[in-house]
Length: 184
Image 1: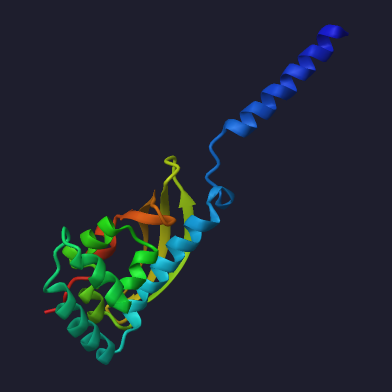
Image 2: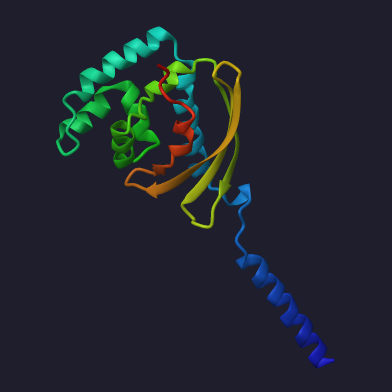
């Protein structure tokens, strides 16, 4: 009897340990802070599909005047980010290093998206990966090329701790941007 109680106790302990140690990729394991940051970024970024021609012209003019003097090593960079409302919005969701990388690659702003005004998007799902700071965002894009193409893609995102709060430290935009080339 004593052996049976001990065996049942050990079995229960083993079940509890195994349940607690298994990696949970469900939405429950996604922190609210990370989820909010990622969703805020993607909604703001993908909103570029909806910019009017006037908004694009104003943005390009505004950004060109700020970025022409851009020196990522200089103190002017902080002033440029804080001085410009469109650029400043990204400091709330991206690390400075990621903002610089996206600007350098021509993805912030993403002028290619100007050529695809009919494109609609839906953020379908946010999943945790095995890395505690990494996520996969499933996005559905409809009406690419005026209705000819619909795509579902995964966008990998890595989060980073900063002095302020959690920010996006890296976004793998390769697959996303391969869908949106500048039309000739």
